[in-house]
Image (cartoon, rainbow, N blue to C red; front, side, top):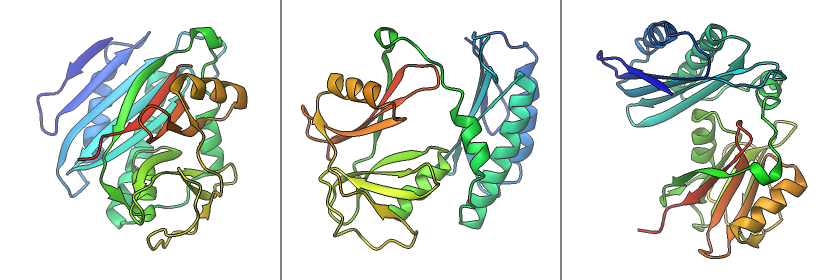
Length: 257
């Protein structure tokens, strides 16, 4: 991996992986900086990552991702394309749209075709070669469902683990295949939610209680993009998901303060 960093404010870090031209960081930095100049809010940090996957059968072999710290609010955008420059151009367009929605205080409906295009690029690895390569944590602070949905959209995820404000239960908000927003709570209850303004549905099914190794097997057998489960060792809700590189990612909650 090659890393180059801008000395100008806001700090913009550009990382390259795979066969990517050495002049791409300057191109990406210039494009991203132009978008960030119009946010109207301090940009504390920006990190861009461009990866060319070594897979000749992949239709769009380049993934570009940007993570922005917008005055304490995290915004994440990702896109896929056939060439590194195309990936950066698409990334810039999507980031501009996302920041506009953040500035307006609302989230526009996403284009379903674009969402499908983002999700057909996951690499396939044999089960015995898959690893849990990334552990992420979420804050123990309670969140309302509306806040969790905003967090999910700001981070450009299809699911988000959080502690529901009404009862403090580990929960996950996610989008179904028909773009419906659904909330599942670890204990499967569908009552006692804090007030919600966004149209949602509630899953009546409790999250399975199992060890991480069992969660991996469940995810493999179901073929779902992620699995919400209660870790048998710590008794807390976690999410195991497929990463774009074919491995698994695990999202765990921080311990209560």
